[in-house]
Image (cartoon, rainbow, N blue to C red; front, side, top):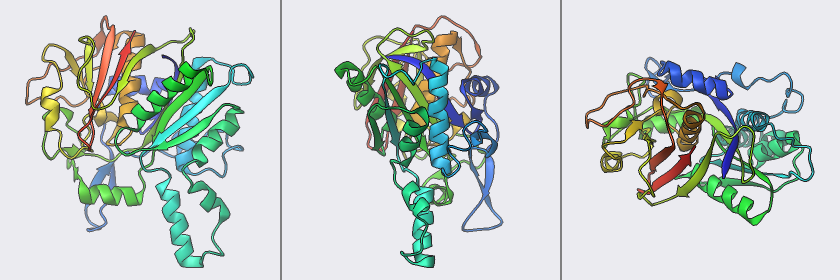
Amino acid sequence: MNIAGIGIVSTRGRGIKSLDTALREGWVMPSQIKSYNDQNAFYAAYRVGKKTINDINLSRKIRRADRFSKMALLAAWDAVADSGIQTNDKESAIGIILATAFGPHVTTFRFLDDIIKYGDESVSPTTFSHSVHNAAVSYISTVLNSRGPTLTLTQFTSPIHQALILAQAWLEEGRCKYVLAGCVDECGNVMEYICNQKLRIANDGKIKPFNCSASPSAVPGEGSVFFMTTLEKCRNKYCEIIQVSLNNCETEAKPDICIMEADGMAGDETTYRNALPADVFTGGYAPIFGSMKIAGAFNCASGALMLKKQIRYACPVQDNPYDLNLITKTEPAEIKQICCIRKNCADETGIIRLIR
């Protein structure tokens, strides 16, 4: 399955160029959010800026959309544009798969607050319609004028893996010629509160993926990543996805780079210590985007960009107590295969393997 285009919306901006810039620049200080327990205290969070999700060309079509839907739509739109594939071709029907861990929870809680405040007969029908998980993919298919199948997946442990596995199935079954598969999650006030209560928020704003800690540090994040995938030859090919698996720590061949997806969301990251080969370059880019259940999509996009540009990007935070073979410098390199490894909260090992 080839990746023909990538769209991304993150705290560092929008589009594939913003990803390249972020990987080159490395870590930056996240925003400071007021604590709910102490109004004089603050904690770190990575938020997507308002300017990032404002698009003059699409503003009329998405004027009623919430932040969740806007982030998903813009990432999906950019993935299609990046691929160069014409979506108005009836013979080139595009399937759309959107995966999320928590859905549009900000809008859902707004709807519930309105019920409490105004009663169930006086709440906004627009707010209700946007509180449904499938609203975002509906926006995407409408704006792209897509006639292909659409589906929203809600999964806590490995949403991007599930989306890519399904995309592969759709392509192999011939349901559609192209599949637009991606993830989106939002970091609203409720989610920030939960993260602040349940996770150990990094005081210095730095996620340290290579500490392999039993109580890792986290920095809540948000954003969206979409991949235009196909079995056909494509002019803007990034790489090929040859393996997407869960609960499997075995790889068919030793990769050139392992991307470690530790971001503080698993609760216990000690199992990463034995998951990475000592003689393989190791990368970890969670400190750039933040802690999310969909972090695997951002790492997969980073790996695809490395394969296309043949560049190793330096790890943004290089604390390395276990002497892993970290990528410490951004430089050109011959890269044939990259393996993204994620340990989720269910103690499963998720693998996404990419080849040039």
